[in-house]
View (spheres, one colour):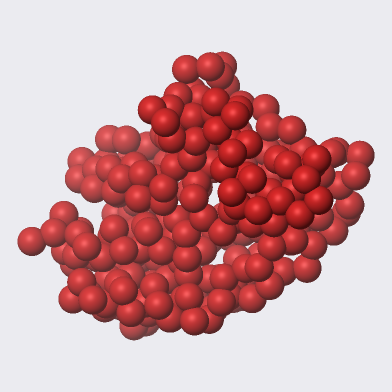
Length: 280
């Protein structure tokens, strides 16, 4: 028996990276999984987004645990698409017990170089999209008097990152959103929390855009150059310069298996020692 037998979880950004890891961790504990992803490239974002094939692979891997799994193409910025996904999940699975609002994108630029399109894309995806997903599931959770919501923020909302003003603003906003929502749904059987990971080994971090940022003196930096630069920076903890998605999934599982519903409005930092140096 799993800790989440009989539960239904909706995971955004579920095609790869942290989203896939969370979906599989939930499935391993017995939850049926609805994995949502835009599965298409986004203008402004300088690295490839997830694909339909990756979303299908997440569904296949989740189903291998003996649970029901469904993949849906959803742009979290689009109210109609979000609501349609929630409606379909409830129609096919009967309910939504867990929401992991995990989707997100990144774009690096000094503040004076951030375009309107870049600002809007980051804020609309990383903050407004999280709001729309939470808003859509709340009526179902209120009716059931049960729900576990976890939103992905970032250590960028606990420390001050360079060249990421729009990203940091969105991730700080996620924390405010989570705390306000937690108060509004208190005593309704719903908990709302945030996780703040440090850099994670996903396509969002390991891509040419990031390599160029960390290695501006190299014409065409490789992943090896990037790894060396991270090593030279002495960033991280216990020889790790970045997290694996599974490290974050452990925190997510902890929050959604809170049977008594006593952990809410909280921010769980998975920061590779960063929280010891921050004051946020």
